[in-house]
Image (tube, rainbow over the protein chains, first blue to last red):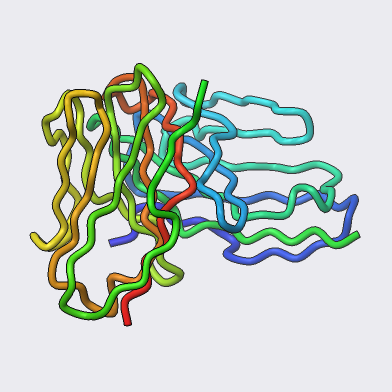
Length: 111
Length: 114
């Protein structure tokens, strides 16, 4: 059972364009994390959001946690080829270290 | 500080064999979680160990097992390998066993079952 729906699954854009990745669930999470994974590597944490309505910015990346803590979005402004990779959202129910992952968004930014 | 290390990085086995994968967490981290990553199912939680005790378990058959040692290093074992067990196995460590704790992932072990 996929508890976290992530969309789109694939995204191919030109350098300089903006994009948004969505992560939705019918469940309430105690926190939600976004990761980026490159081929041959493990996921690397980008941000953790905990409070409903929270917005966090990391340079050109903006993360938002929904008011009801059931959904989240990642917005990238002026994408660059270095942003290419697999973006994963992961929710926690506060059951220790167990994370529920979305299917991932494969982003390709062409120069 | 050294990151999470996993050995071996690549492994090829045949059906019916068993395999043991190793994970060394970041120094001072007491929680180790294991995940299976496949193209079809994505990242799925296997289990978590904290202070040598299994804290959480995912929906995997009993062929998948693990343990944690007193130095927090962890191993996972898969017995009677099946073709569908081919995957990237990732371990992640965190300081404690709280949902909001940052989990740091290792590079993974790529297991191929022939």
